[in-house]
Image 1 (cartoon, rainbow, N blue to C red):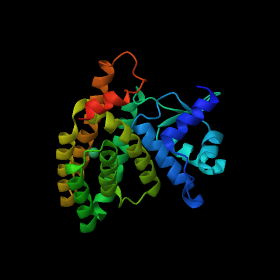
Image 2: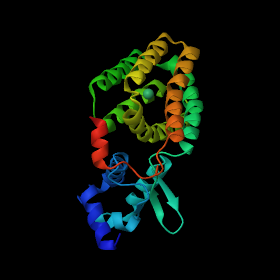
Image 3: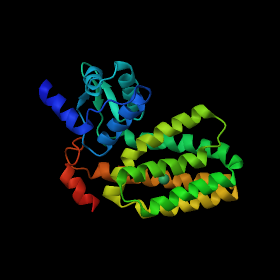
Image 4: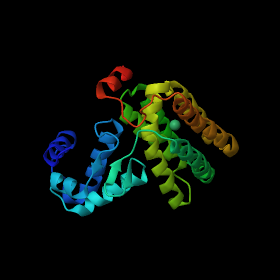
Length: 247
Ligand code: NI
């Protein structure tokens, strides 16, 4: 893509409204994240710090921070000579990511359950209720993340919680894929209710088992997909195909 075309493309996808200075990093990160998750920014496109800084009328610092966050969530990867590049929607290391999440989230759950308050349980239940009626994929991803984080929120190790949250941010992408291709939505809700019930009862081992099963459904879905995948897996579905699938 020529430079002018790229500028034009980024402006169409991201807008060029200047964010307030103190929110620049968060606003830019969120704009990029949602454009990657819904496929408007396709895999392989390079995101250069200076291009984005110029687009939003900010310095390179908040842009660099936003890109770093997205890289931690595996939405971007750094390639030699190209810099930060939008990562493919799904690839082999997705199952490794899930395996790691099972380890980290099980530990977070163990630490958190004994300290969960009635208010935490009520908050988690509220997210499940919202998930019942939500149809927007990106909002479903966010609600799922918030439900899980609420269950882990009382864990004493805050660095562990940060890693867990990075993993959940990454799952927003898988979840979108799962919901579209595997119709896992209802199954997930059943799992969520079970998790909540066991956590409320304070039964640590059962809750950890239920969480492992819940996350393994994601692993199975991805393995299935990778075994039967179409030839060009790194090319995102076209917007019209996504719309058709979403109906
Ligand atoms: Ni879930």
